[in-house]
Amino acid sequence: MSESPLPVRVRYAPSPTGALHLGGARTALFNFLFARQRRGQFLLRIEDTDRARLKPGSQEQIQEALGWLGLNWDEQPVVQSQRKEIYRGAADELIGRGAAYRCFCTPERLELMRAEQRARRQPERYDRRCATIPPEESARRAAAGEPFVVRQRMPAEGTTSLHDLVMGTVVFRNETLDDHVLLKSDGYPTYHLAFAVDDHDSRISHVIRGDGWLPSAPKHLLLIEAFQWPVPAFAHLPLVLGPDRKPLAKRHGAKDVLEYREAGYLPEAIVNWIAFLGWSPGTEDEILSMPDLIARFSIDKVQPSPAIANLERLDWLNGQYIRRLSPDELARRIASTMGEVPVERVRPVVPLVQERLRTLAEAPDMLRFFFTRPDGYRADQLLPKGKDVEATAAAIDACETALQGLTEWAHEPVETCLRELAHRIGWASRDLFMALRVAVTGRTVTPPLIESMVVLGKPEVLARLQRAKAALKPLN
RNA sequence: GGCCCGUUCGUCUAGUUGGCCUAGGACGCCGCCCUCUCAAGGCGGAAAUCAGCGGUUCGAAUCCGCUACGGGCUACCA
Image 1 (cartoon, rainbow, N blue to C red):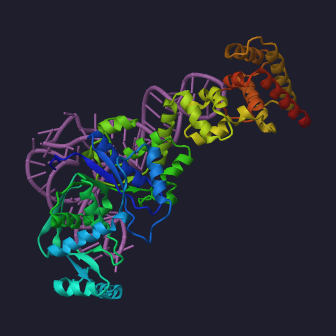
Image 2 (cartoon, helix red, strand yellow):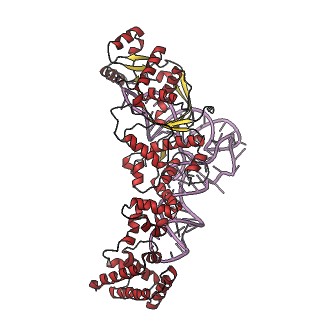
Image 3 (cartoon, protein in one colour):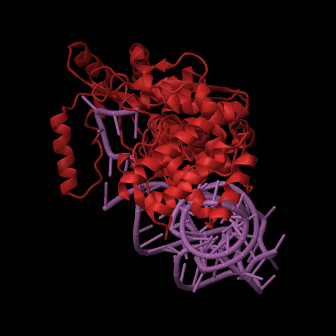
């Protein structure tokens, strides 16, 4: 595990086949943290060599999600489809060196071959029929227009070992390696070729990627060696799983990163949350900001086992981050989710909900009563236990009169006034408060009543009390 | 089937040079306190014989082996 003397350069290399999901975001994050900590570069590469699976708009979506999380990349993203000729040249070079060869086998023959191997219960691997075609013949057939792919020539014996920063040393027997395809017949490279060429061209020092690549890592190592290029360090990250221990998917309610934004999560919370999926600082700290993470991240503290995403923990973390926001900032973020309501109207009300929110998405519902009067009351909510309609109407009426007489509309006088009133009419203050709460807000669960009333203002509160009284009348 | 990786409370994890671990923290859960509801906050609790078995050792969650289970890869996908 020798430290690379080269400057640190890492990359996140998604294929544009959909949105950025959590696992990808975490891979990107770990790359980003590592780069920033070592004052290196974090690059973005678009692996779009699979023309069939390409989804329009995907690249933009991925970039927006990365930006939202604050994972800003350096330099211009490398787009593989724009580098077709480079890969072709690289494949030719490999053929020239004897490290690769053209294969003219048809898909039909390959399928037949595999079927036979399956029948004989042998490993399904290319049988290397084309490996022994003389170079001149190979070149002639290619020149004649016969379709072909280029395959990597694997050593028949020996072992290839990888010193992975997360998994430790992993040894593979070369005889188990397949002569996989490097260049497809459509002229596009497969992942393996493009990976080696691009990482070399980008001078990538550390390959930090999903552990799905671990099994093909020896091929990659051999490829890099065939080119006689410097070998980067490797770190394979375990998967993020859903609650059923299956790879994270839609059905778990674990959504694409951008959908978390819709659901009212803060990017800071998402980052903190996924950072702790498979990694921990080794201390008892739980809340770490991006700068903290950059300072404390360490690849060898990454867990080699897969992590199961804990959505409840995200909710808690999100609440923590919401409480740490300044009221102004929170108001801005809430207003941005509420379209029609201007920030100035949200701001005064924010302190009342700040410690009650788990997600921004809960805010509109929680705040609604500040902006619109309750439309319709439910008797079962308005009437405290054991109090009838008449008594409740009378109590509300008494409140109205008492509040009317207040000269100062502030927390202290209002509370004193109401408690004295409760005492005077022989009501438990909790009952009075609940009746008032429903009268003023239309609901039984709200931010603190007195504060809410103060913010609403005296005329509005009195108006709502009258409406509540009116609503009680027909019930009598 | 073949190859590779993994396995500490329900979940994320601490633990990594074997003894200070009668295994610590966090989320969630339960109870109490606070209290005008709900939260937040405070306090306390239940919760892992460290996957199992066999070694090495005075001593193992920590080292070795085997087994079981889970996962990944096994495409002209990434």
